[in-house]
Length: 230
Ligand code: CDP
Image (cartoon, rainbow, N blue to C red; front, side, top):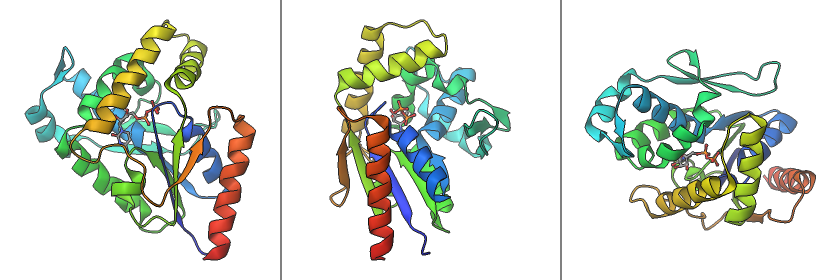
């Protein structure tokens, strides 16, 4: 069967990573979480004192980029693919609130985007890939055969993210999470380079009132429709 590229974009905590990962598993494709790559660069910048009071030292970070390697380790016993920063497993740390609070500022930096987009495009050369993020259908893979744009209200997304953080034992409150989501939405949609926006040819999935199962089925049906038309 002919392999395609699947691009899934959307707002923060819209559930796109879960959907993308599951689709990849069901159809035997490679899954790449592009947000994890921006998060790993953010963790690096935090650890090297390149972020102070939310302000990123763009020059130092741009100069350090050639020395930052981000790779993925296949899903382990927990079923989760782990992100490695210079060979170190940082899967847990990159999901912390501190990283969430700074990632959108790092993701605005053109040098960072240029480098990560190039790495992401290499993953797509052989097709058979599902990638999720903010600019996958617009910038990384503008020719992707299947594009999905996921949307849900900020309140619903905050509820989901809060649950996720609580399950990991992080102490945060709803207002704090909602505030972070709103701030990232604003920065992500208004930045100069590759802002978050729906690609003209993307299929929209508003999953506010959909169960996990319903959205998985919706995605899988769309995938089969597109592959069979090829
Ligand atoms: O998991 P969540 O939806 O909160 O976000 P993520 O997918 O892990 O992405 C974290 C942040 O990275 C986003 O808020 C964006 O600022 C940035 N990002 C981006 O700019 N471009 C991408 N392709 C993916 C993420």
